[in-house]
Length: 155
Image (cartoon, rainbow, N blue to C red; front, side):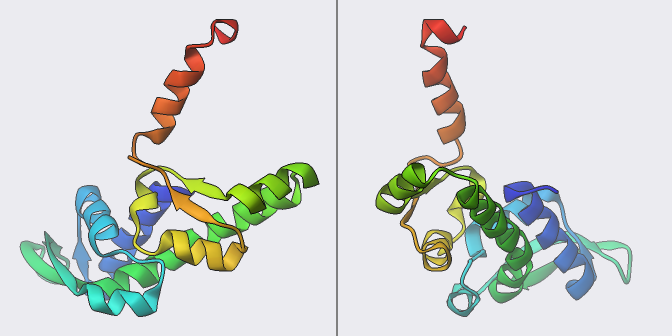
């Protein structure tokens, strides 16, 4: 199962294909996710829409279509639910001493998916732990790996 940003992009592309009858690029799917994607569907209503270019399936010709934020957020629900399930499974398998630290200090989101509006507050409500978005979330993992490689005993 694919998790995170790639699964979200695929879900958005699939939704646009089915609901709008329109083929869009991976880049436009990512743009929709980051600019009008919301983990809270109710709050998505205020985010409006974005016009994207692609292929109209009914004509086979290039065209533009307005994609509503609510539709993007609905498409994100499945991938977000899978992330929640993975976190819950991980917490269940974690030593109680470590879970205590997580409850006190929280979870930090990284990657492009961390930029989804309201994801941190949505996850915090569902998981009942603090959730934060890393500074520069798209590069946080690679920067962390760079820091780890600075330790000579790991090389």
